[in-house]
Length: 126
Image (tube, rainbow, N blue to C red):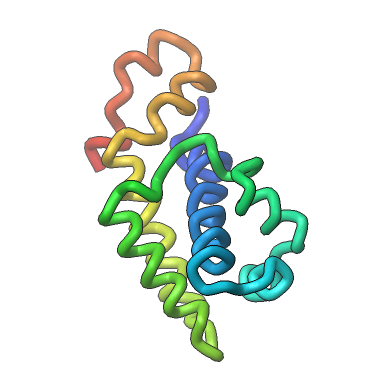
């Protein structure tokens, strides 16, 4: 049995990290190494996020509710002291919106045996 959170780990979390990384590099003008230090990742990972080689299974940046939460995460991360609890809560809220909008459905169906994937409405009913 494949849980939605398992699909989210492979699709939603990388998409959020990619959106954050791209924002830092493109809008904040930061270097990849600076972003890597803030996010606790390698410079190579940031490069893959910014070039869309990672975190591109789903597209989330065109969803206003998601972008607002990502902007909040970015503002928190730019502060000297990171508020871990706030970031975690924003990640969960972002994931919930992504699931409710059905953006995880296609990748989930690809990994879930039929016919259960055809009738699943779990994410949209949360």
